[in-house]
Length: 192
Image (cartoon, rainbow, N blue to C red; front, side, top):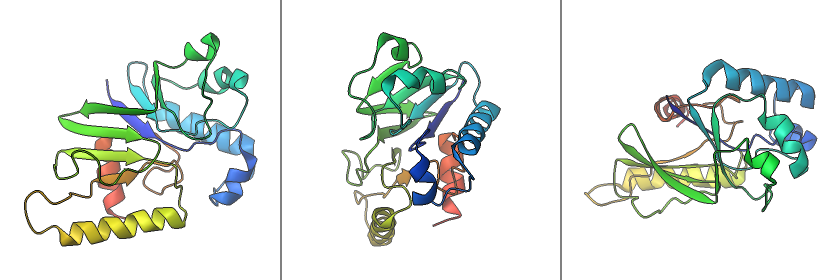
């Protein structure tokens, strides 16, 4: 039983292919790749935390997209996700939250669609902040610049650890695949 994380899938959103420069010819290819990648790594007892903007479709269409995906699915609501869900859709989601904190293999993890670089435990090396929302835009560049500056300034105990990572599916360390926290930390290091 493992925890996985991913954000900003935007399933059904044709314009996101161009916006993110996603390597797909069309929505079918994007959707099939996401489902194949997901089900290649996630098993029935695993939990996938979807950090917002799962689907660009009417709420009534969500079961169609959630159904083929393995594991228990927890939605951390994003700005493009519905405010209310039908009972039919809720059957496919273990939980729906705007913000959540969990423990994953001894590490504390803050889950939010939106980046929160200076969260309540930003000084603690055992806390991580996973987010989405900013895709690979200029705002993401600002987050990375801030992260590098904060990490470089860390000279004494109690200073912010800068443990925040964008888990948007389009990020190269995610590659349209839910990843464990260990995978995210290790894979993302090669891009810093």
